[in-house]
Amino acid sequence: METGLPKFDSAFSIDCVIFGFEAGELKVLLIERNEDPFKDWWALPGNLVENDESIETAATRILYELTGLRDMHMEQFHTFGEIHRHPLGRVITVAYYALIRIIGQKEVKPVTQYAKKAFWHAINDLPKLAFDHSLIFDTSIQKLRRRLSYQPIAFELLPEKFTLTQLQLLYEAILSKKLDKRNFRKKMLSYGFLKELDEKQKGVSYRAAKLYKFDRRKYNKIFQNDLEG
Amino acid sequence: METGLPKFDSAFSIDCVIFGFEAGELKVLLIERNEDPFKDWWALPGNLVENDESIETAATRILYELTGLRDMHMEQFHTFGEIHRHPLGRVITVAYYALIRIIGQKEVKPVTQYAKKAFWHAINDLPKLAFDHSLIFDTSIQKLRRRLSYQPIAFELLPEKFTLTQLQLLYEAILSKKLDKRNFRKKMLSYGFLKELDEKQKGVSYRAAKLYKFDRRKYNKIFQNDLEG
DNA sequence: TTTAGTTAGTGTAAATTTTACACACTATAT
DNA sequence: ATATAGTGTGTAAAATTTACACTAACTAAA
Image 1 (cartoon, rainbow over the protein chains, first blue to last red):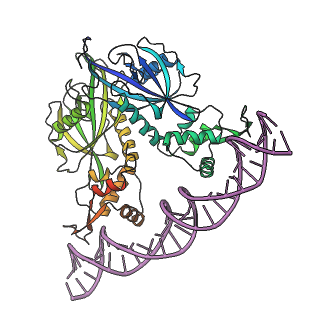
Image 2 (image 1 turned 90 degrees about the horizontal axis):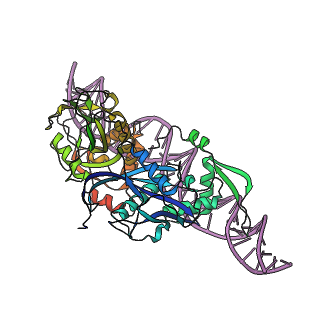
Image 3 (image 1 turned 90 degrees about the vertical axis):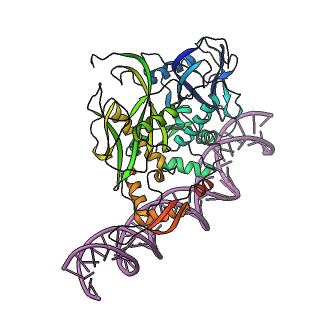
C-alpha cells in the first residue's frame, strides 16, 4: 500500500481487545481511527511501546488512556509479527485482552488523539477492522474460550454482585452455545467459590433472583495446587 | 549490570525452548554462550529478528542455525518484555517452544558464532540460565502441559513408530506424574487416531512391544469441529 | 533346555461426572 | 385477580474415570 506517509524503520506496539458484557451480549471496544493509514476505519485500540516501559506497563497505560480505567484484568495472548502487517513499516505487536466491568454508555471518551471515538460493538456484529485486527480479534476469542475453563475470568466481566442467570448468559456468550440451566447451576455451585448473598436483584418486573459474589480467597484455596498457566 | 560493552537502543529477539525426548526423559537443548553478557553461562538459543522476516520465519531460521533441522513443530507461547531483562539494552523477546524428534547425541554442533556448544539437559536437572531464561523455560513447561491435553504434540517428540509405553513415559515426563498403564492405553486407543502396525520393537532384551503410528488424518477428522487454539 | 528376569498386555467393578429433561413458585404490572 | 416472565429445583440414565493384579511373551544366562 502506497500512502505517501512517512515510513519508519521498526517499531513495537501493543493492541488490546477490550471485552465487556452488557445486556446478555459480549462486546468489544473499538476505536474509529482519526489518522492514516486506515483513517475512518474501526480498529483495536493500541499504541507503541515506549523504551522505558515494560510491555505490561505499556498495555496498562494504553488501556488507561483509552478508557480512563485502571486495575482491570489483562492478559497477553499472542504476538503478531508478519512483516507487512502495518503498511508504514515493520511493527510487531503484542496483543492483550482486557476484561472490564462497567459499561456506562455505548460511547467511551478516548483520551488519545488518534481515535475519533470509541464504541462498544457486539462481537457477533463487528465491522471490518484495520490492519490485521480481525485476525487478532479472532485469536483473542479462541484464547478467551480456552481460558474460561481453567481461569475465573468470567467474574472480571460481571458486576461484583450477580445472578446465576447472568453468569450463565456470559458463559453462553463466550462459548457461543446454549447451556442447560440446571446443570450449569449445579456445577457452578459445586465448586464452592460462589457466595450466596442475603440480597436480591432489584428493579426487575418479575421474581427477583438471588445475588452471588465470587469468593476469590476460596477459589485460590481450592485450586492452589493446580496450574493456572 | 555494568559490562563495558556497547549498549544498543531497542531490539527484538526470539528465544527457543527446544524439547526432545530420550531415554524416558524430557530434555532441553541449551547453548553455552561464547560472548558477553553471560559468557560461559547456559542459555536458551535465540537471536535477533531481522527487519525483513516475520517472527515465524525468524524462529525457524534460528532453530535451523542451531540444530540444522527444519520442519519441526514450533509454537509461540509468550512474549517477555521487562525493561531490564537484557543488560545491554531494551530487548523484547518472543518465546517459542520447538519439539524435535531425533536426538542423535548429547552434543549438537551449533552453526552460530555466539554459542560455544549446545547440549541436551534433562529438565529436572537444569543449570542456572542466563538473562530471564529460567523464567522463560518455566513458562514453556506450563504451556506445554496445558497444550498436551488438547493438541497432539506428544507425537512430535516421538519417532514415527513408537510403543504405547514410550508414549506413556512421555506423557508422564511432561506432566511430571505417574499414570495408570491400563487406563492410559484404554484412553489413548479409544481416540481412534493411533494405528497399530504389524511390527514390533527391535533390539530389546525382553518381550518386544507392538509399534503404533499417529494417524494425523484421522486425528483431524475426529477433532475437526473442536477449536485448537 | 531350563530358569530367572523383564516388560507387554489385558478386564472389571465401583465411583464420579455428565447429560437430558419439565414444572411449580414468586414477584410484578395491569 | 390475573396475566406475564423469569427463578429455582431433582432424578434417572449414560458416559467417563478410577483403582487395581496377574498372565503371556520374550531374552539372557546358566
